[in-house]
Length: 236
Image (tube, rainbow, N blue to C red; front, top):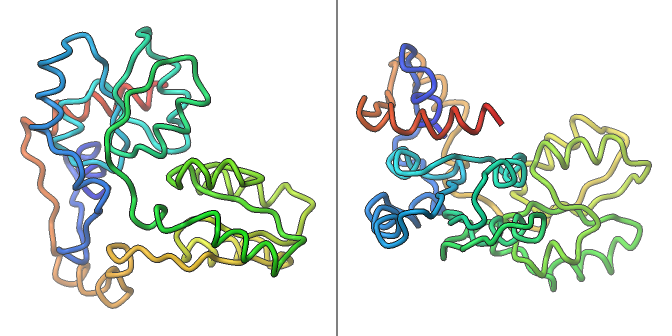
């Protein structure tokens, strides 16, 4: 995500407070792997989730977020796309479109840890609660849910819902935002944490601003190609 900010804002300084803060999902696809697939299937369109590296974006036709993935795929004139790197989000898109979606064998370990058995235990304990989950969860999980959507879509759903209790199937820290925005409602996390995100602390943010480190640099050659895929997404 820091690379994405740098790609879209080449004249601004982008800082990463913790140099080792990474994304396991993004690491599951490399530009070399994607380029090999493109060489094998020249007409295949590549849709890369924003949780991918700058190099992967640079060899993609278009990018997407979890909120606009369906719209992005539907915007393409082709019948078949390769969706990378998240197979669960790709499966969700597959169910929402008429396109043939070829899935990459990647996943977010945070959402992969969310299981139907965990949800059932919480549902037995909080029987009045609705289940809301992120589409990076396994297919069986969002088939069980009352609502599936990105964090922004979940926020909107909760705010507009007359229900007051929710089991939240995504990274546990999202519950803080939901509680802040909806103090009259109750939220039950599923006990799953992103180690990468949690390496970022207020102290490290303060230090990053004081020392102006660590600067995120994307080579201009990669940046220009990745920006094309991101601009196409923004146009959608």
